[in-house]
Every structure is written in structure tokens, then in C-alpha cells.
Image (cartoon, rainbow, N blue to C red; front, side, top):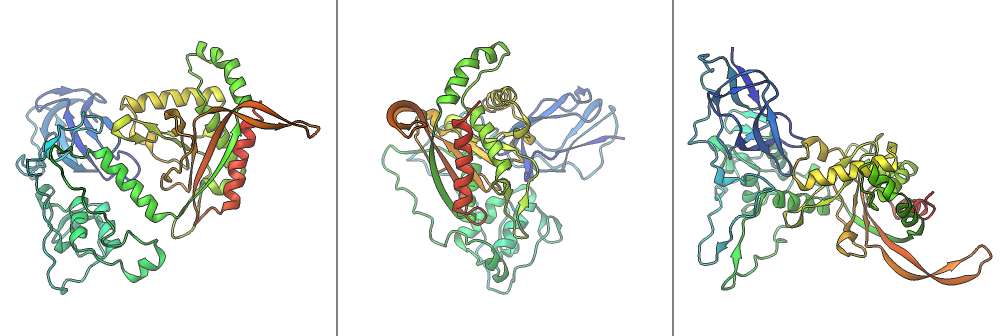
Length: 446
């Protein structure tokens, strides 16, 4: 009997993936666990292994198609076996590759000249009279609307949208997130009163700035999946969490001396010792001292995380950034942290992270100082309640007080540390105590 190949769960909150490339074609032999296809999500490209030995009997979706998690995408079996009827999606109905960027790491698309008219966005259906009240949608098969993804159901319920008014542009007319967002642009619906009372306000209608005027010689480069995902994530964070900021400075004399004394030793072990592991270690210890900063907000109450999993922002230059997660950061030695930081950063830049390596963080750190920034106000990486920014290390003249109370001027390697925090959960006093603990750990490094 043919074996179904289903699209697996590709990370926390990921409900669909785009087939970038089939590594095997119909009729090809494949071994169990041998890579069968490549799938791209918003931030990770990954290989999907074959679930069994056999021959690829049928591929149901072409390259470039976006498929829901759990959907059957192919069959594997013995040559001549019959594939179940009605499972294959006709190629003409599948989303063509041109509608989705093949991978977040792909080269930016060629700019479109101003003189060319941009491709029209699928226009949402004009809202009919108010005779269609919104209903509460559940993910899955709907008798009139077909398949509804978890994200589309969540958006419709939050915004009070009747999906019968929305024109679907996806596979077999399926309604996608982009269709719902396009509908909201022309017919924004007020959220239900009960939800509005317990949820922070969304951006007000009309708050979106007018598009920039196109001047002669200007071009438009379409946004790739990663940039769209970053934009949505940052906007959602700013409008869901009231951001507050505190900034402190730290003397890194002891950290710099420790690094200088041990970087050759670490290099012999095949590990490059940077300043980032020190910041991660200090944050991990401070999170144990102030566990409120290691929580997440929910409408039912605070979620107290027992593990300290620190997300580490890694720049991908113009492609955006990604946040791989250092799990159990408080249990790792400095050598273990340095090795993990090196590994995750290298694989992030080469697009080799696994989906589970970019989910599950309880706190985040961004080292914006690597590009010369002194201090910044980072946007919180949801669902965390805080993110720490580390600025550039600069030698400055500072006043030093000795044990007798005498002051003197000395040159010290100084750094600004910033903490953006969710004021629904963390108040200024706790934020200052947490950041003060980080400063204390760095300045008294043993």
C-alpha cells in the first residue's frame, strides 16, 4: 500500500511551507531518511526526508506551491501500486512558483522599472450589505469556504470578518492570510467588543502612511518572504506590547582581560571566543535572579518559563535577521556558550538552521554594537517580555573611585546595555534591577 508523505510541522506557529525543490522525481528510487524535497518557511529552508524505502509514485504539488502543514504532498511505494484517487492537486490549480519566493536566502529579485505597471494585487470582493454577520471560525475544512488555515481563522475571529466576503487567491480558491489583510485594507472591521476590552488596540484605520511617490528612475524590488515576516512580527510586537526602555553602562575591563587571557586556549579547542558569550552568560544568570523577565504574557495570565532559552539575533545583512535559540543557556559553561554561539551564527548565515532552532526563546539578546552602534531600543521578540541590546565597546575616560574614596580618571572599555521591556509585565524597578545584575556580573567577572 502506498505510503503518504505529509508536510511535517516546521516550527512553532508555522502553519504552511513552500516547496522550494523536489530532490527526487516521480519514478525515482528513494531510501528511508534520504532527503526527498526542500521546503522554505518564513525564515528557514530545510530538507524533508523520505519516511520509507521505495519509489516516488506521485508528487502532488509542484515546486513553488505553498502547502498546509499535515497535507499529503507525495506517495512512496512499490512500482505499479495505485495511488488513492482524488488526492493529487492538478498542476494548473497549484500556486505557480512565481507567486512565492523560492527561499528566504535567494538573491533579491530583479527590480521592476517604474515605467512598468506593477502586478495587480488580488482584489478583495466588495463587501455586501451587512446581512452577513461574522461567525467564529475553526481551523480545518469549512462546508462553504473550503480549508481554513489556523492563521486565517485567528485573523478573521480577531477582526470580526465574515470570510464569505473575502475572495481567495490560494490553491483551489483557498483564502490566504494575504487575502484577509488585503480585505482589511479596504474594509477594516472593528473587533468584537469582548475581544477589544482585553486586547491592546490595533493600529488605527488610516494610520498607514501614504505610499512614497515614484520618481523617474525609481524601481520597485518585491519583498521576499523573510522581509515580510520580519515586518509583520515587528509591527505586531509594537502594537501588542507597551515598550519601555532602560539603559546602563558597564566597565568591561575584567571581561576584556579574561577574554585576552583565554582566547588562544579556546582557539585550540576549535572555538572562537567573542564578547557575545559573556553577554549571554550574564543575561542567563540575571534571568535566574529575576525570573519575571523570563516570562511570557497571555490573556489567561503570566507564563512562567522553567527553562532559560536565549534567542540570539543574527544579522543576514540585507536579507534581514534571524534569531536562533540557545537552549538551557544558564546550564552552559563559557566554552559551551561560545561553541553554541559560533555554531548557530555560522549556520544561520549559511541558511542551515533547523526549524526547531528558531523557536522557544524566553528572552533575547541583540549585539547591535558589531556595526558601531552605541545603544539602541530593540523591539521585543514576541512572545518574550524583554530584549537586551549590547552596544559597541569604546575606550573612554571615566572616573574611578578607590576603596578609600579617592577619585581618579582612567581609560576603560565601556559599553552601553539597553533593555526594552513589556510594561504590562515588567515595571521599571524590576527592569533596572535585572539590568543592574547584568552589569554587576560583567564588571566582577572571575
